[in-house]
Length: 281
Image (cartoon, rainbow, N blue to C red; front, side, top):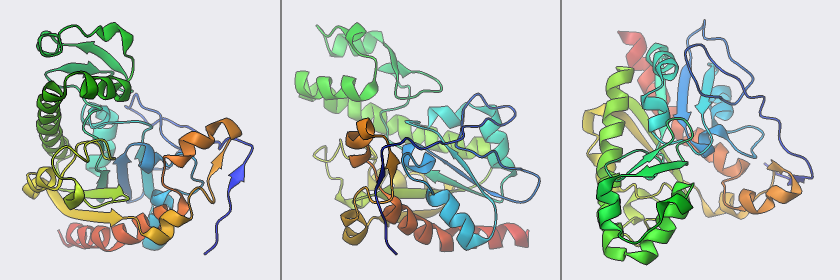
């Protein structure tokens, strides 16, 4: 399979909405009348700069509609509190949830925007006491906030990380409870969960999520799919991605079409197993 970098123009994502949801998803809008697989996740599931993200590729392999409910920069909060998404997931034959970063969700230290989870809204009193002297009005995005706090007060940052990790596990369990069925969890990155030791790898996506956290999910997860993107796929870089010239730097931070093909291949057997169990009921 060969790939080419397509530059000079932005990709039209044909954003759409579904009844009951306040979120915008990648289009075209799909019919929910026939059995389908629902895929929830952040920027990677949405497929920024990728003409055919892994949801589309999985649909080809399954020969069954796969509804892309990925949202740019989303964390778990965007889905766990959205009645439309929860309804669509509950009605799906199988539900795939990308392992999203832990910093884009509200917790005891700070609050994020309920839909645009990468937006930092406010710090709690507990946060202000822990990071005395920080002017939180200067921060609008969680990435910027955490980068600053890691350098400003490393010990306090470790406490914040632990809170984020606990919140991530609790929110994943809440999502599974509200959907009403075990989830297929997709780890999609250039490394495996076991490689995230201590806080040395905290900043690598998905931010702060570790193997131990995934193990805590227990029966809330039907299957865990680890897609560690191969060196061969990573070597393709941005080949096949569609982005305007001013988006080139952002595209370099994301996984390209070759990686999305590997994610679809990794998901296929796990989703098939879940579908067989569902159909036997």
